[in-house]
Image (cartoon, rainbow, N blue to C red; front, top):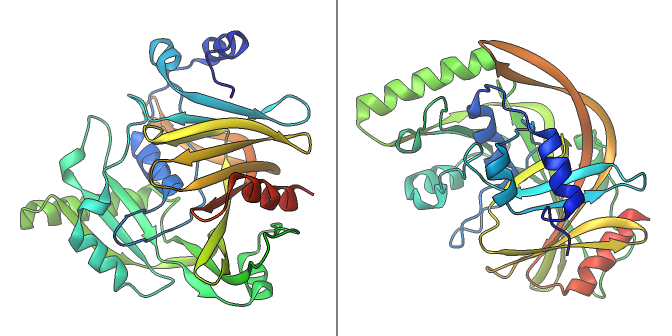
Length: 318
């Protein structure tokens, strides 16, 4: 296992520390999209493209953080997998909101819910997130056509597993428009104040742009998923409190292997996918920065062994 406590990584961390004034609302949206909606009772699972904020934290917090790094064949960092911290705090657990869960279950596939939680606000941050409900397709060629993303499918599968369905999540209207976002936030804040509720959710339209793909493979009552999204920037924030993480090398590629206490086993790998632009709010104005874009694959299952997960990952790498 590799971690940032290694000497060269600590040096890298201190050299890269930067403390911009940024709109943390983007970070809240991104962190929730990256983890998806995961409720042990409801089994709701979503996949999202994440507009990574590429947030950096103080040197003190950084050295205390748990973080794993994977690199490409040229020794460039392509992923920093790290826990939430003071700047990028863990989002509110919407699994505790049964009313929201019910609204989501009744939502038409292809639409989204905008969720506002007033109870977890911190200075300079807003608790507003957008949850698109995936559309399910049973034809893999149609999934490819609709997604407009040039992704790979596993060339090797564990014995008995076949493709079952693909789920496409579409970008909510205004997800990248800060003006629409501000107006929507104001409306939800007023609604929460008027009703006296800590949280408010409303139905929202989506665009035709696909932001997340989930391929489901089944063998009778067993299954695994390959979640695919275009990720901007190297940083991926998540809850590491119930996880064990390991950097392993497969076919000369570094990938992450993760085991979680809820039984999920996961492999994460990335490939370069060009460049894109992210917006952030700094010193009273919006700025733009060109960052690396990565095609991120997450192979997730409670049923597959570590060896079978590696087999699936090999089938994506080759």
